Amino acid sequence: MTRLKESDIDRIIYQMDQYNQELLNKTGHTLAEIAAHAVGIKGVDEAKLRGLGPIAVIPMTCGQGVIGGFSETVTGILAFLGTKAFVTNSSDAKGFAEALERKAVIIFMADDERFIAANLKTGQCSDNSAATGKGYVAALDYMTGGLKDQSVLILGAGPVGTAAVFSVLDFGGKVHVYDKNSNASEKLANAVLDRQDFHVERELDTALKGHRVIVDACPEAEFITPDHLYSDSYVAAPGVPLGIHSEALAQIQNRLIHDPLQLGVATMLYEIMDDIVKED
Ligand code: 2YJ
Image 1 (cartoon, protein in one colour):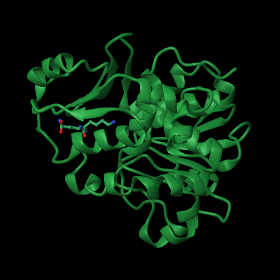
Image 2 (cartoon, rainbow, N blue to C red):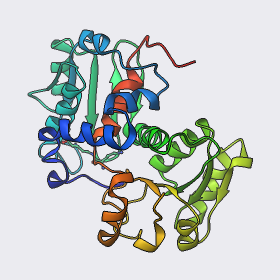
Image 3 (cartoon, rainbow, N blue to C red):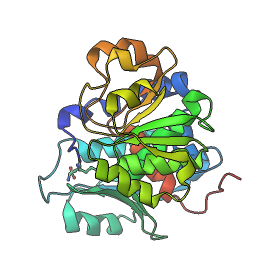
Image 4 (tube, rainbow, N blue to C red):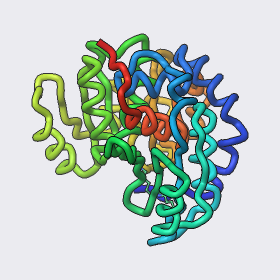
């Protein structure tokens, strides 16, 4: 699992409007609408978001420690979505106590293994990897005009790729999975009930050339080259660093979704908001 660097995230909070507009141009929908779509919520209830109690983001010093600007960036994304979010002054258990004292209803915190959000009223928990997989597939569903009956190549059978697989199947798509560790793809195949719409790909180059809708959920840089992309290709790339080769960027830019944190955090928030009306 990639550990974010300060330089990956230091401009995010200053560019939220621009990023939102970019999503709107590419998918026809805002960040909030995509997050809502990812978790099956009908529309975006801004009044409900404004009415939510405070959300605390707690810095965690364990393992490799605090990433400069991480908590502030998560808070900025949550504030952009209309919530009252704050970074606790203290970290770790002391920060958690502070969150409770300040009447937080939701907390966000991340160590080197997991990045989670928890709703302290309902006990619901959202995991960033799973939420990221769902959020990117929802963006792809909007961007492609619907994944139903489409064949989607998912690169990486880790936590993000796995969530993406189930999400594509939920949208009615067909899944092809490639992982450089073929055991990981086989393990995932065993977890899928409807095997008719699930296929394991064994050769990366062939898999890439045979697909026009791709989720890149692996941490390799620049392996998707110009000859892998067509004029009607769509790529959702939650993986950091970006897997698209710099020479292929210009041709896919307008049909590429990629960010280090925004879609995952937005989907986590929507996933743990309680008593929301679900889509039919
Ligand atoms: O509080 C802090 O600033 C740090 N403890 C944040 C650590 C963030 N964690 C990571 O970047 C891990 N690699 C886990 C990310 C999971 C993403 N799906």
